[in-house]
Amino acid sequence: MGIIMISERLKATILKELKLDDYDIQDTMRADEVPGWDSLNHINVIIAVEKEYGVRFKNIEVLKLKCIGDLQKLVDSKAENKS
Image 1 (cartoon, one colour):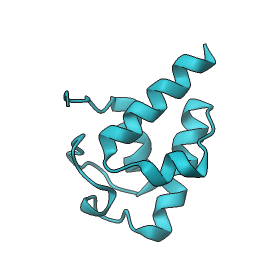
Image 2 (tube, helix red, strand yellow; image 1 turned 120 degrees about the vertical axis):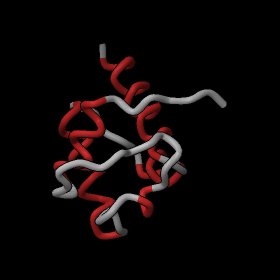
Image 3 (cartoon, one colour; image 1 turned 90 degrees about the horizontal axis):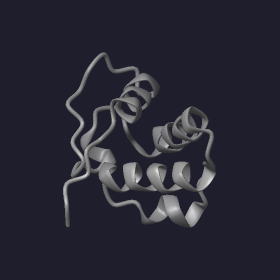
Image 4 (spheres, one colour; image 1 turned 90 degrees about the vertical axis):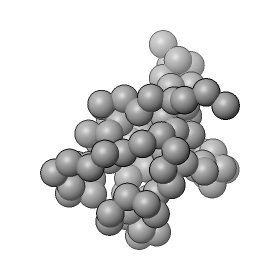
């Protein structure tokens, strides 16, 4: 399992949605390890990411996410399919 670098764009989108000035988000982190990213904010973060990248995620795709690196991979795959 290779390291997935979290893009600055994804990091900025997450931080903005969670109203965090800065936080060192790592690819191996789970959502519940990021301050403010609870079950209520989870859907808001996902929607913010969809808007930022102009993509849509299926519910099953979101449910399968285990860590933030998985979210980056999902965003990348959606963005590739779009272009």
